[in-house]
View 1 (cartoon, rainbow, N blue to C red):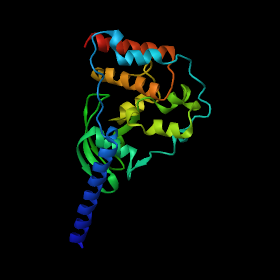
View 2: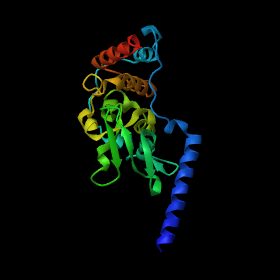
View 3: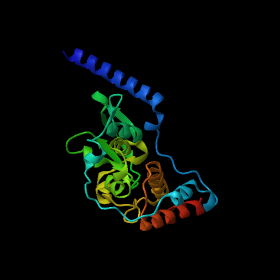
View 4: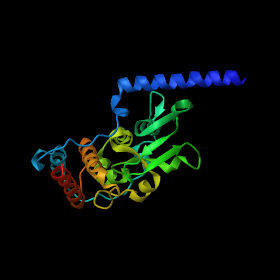
Length: 227
């Protein structure tokens, strides 16, 4: 019986790896690690600053009608793998896969705190590593996502561009804050963080508040001038 179980488990792991390989070939952007903005020697040459300048600037819309369900009922599934496990597989190292495309364990080089976090799947440990929406969904709702179709909002909630595996406590501290109210404690990651926020807002035709724009601009200008 034990031999049969081990055989089934090995076969299951092989199937998962094959599914992941097929997913990588057909959807490589799902598995690519986060990449920083290319260095620039002038603020006029910065793609992120140009994108930021192109975003509309408005006040926040009322939060009326917001709920997580406005962005789909949880994580979507791609080729048998849900979004959470796809992002864990992308962002963790030394990943151990279990059955049903679940990440069992791995190591996170946390972008928000700079700490190394050992991830172990379990009822009391899984939440030590959470998947953050870089542009928080409630922030998106108040800056234009109300006007998107339900399908487009679901895409936003599951887009790897807008998702990072991060320290659970830092994610809870951030809550629905924008760049004007919360930034990663790890200053070395702030350039990439600001760049991602701008890219997401541009991709989904969202706007920024004046305070948010000013905060993003300060970060991105520093990123260029110190390059």
